[in-house]
Image (cartoon, rainbow, N blue to C red; front, top):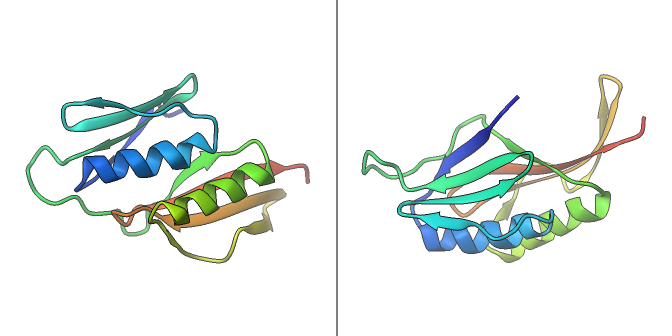
Length: 126
């Protein structure tokens, strides 16, 4: 359904370091810097961070969450631990199982250094 997701950042260097480490836990190669943007590409889509082109400070989406697919509970845990080690902040409940609407998920939430809310999700057999 989606081709890409782009978030704003106020510090390209910090964003690249944070997301190279974080997305590396999910098997994503380091990002490519293109002027005021960074792109992390996979065969499933692209994630990007950019300095706002209007010159104003980047802000995070209130109520927004960006979810990344994980292949296992171990990947979710590594995503969360790496995010915290790279300057992210934990939010919501600790990593764990969430169930509802016939789904069973292993999920972890955190905020990146710019305040964007992220999660890693492993869909488990119900």
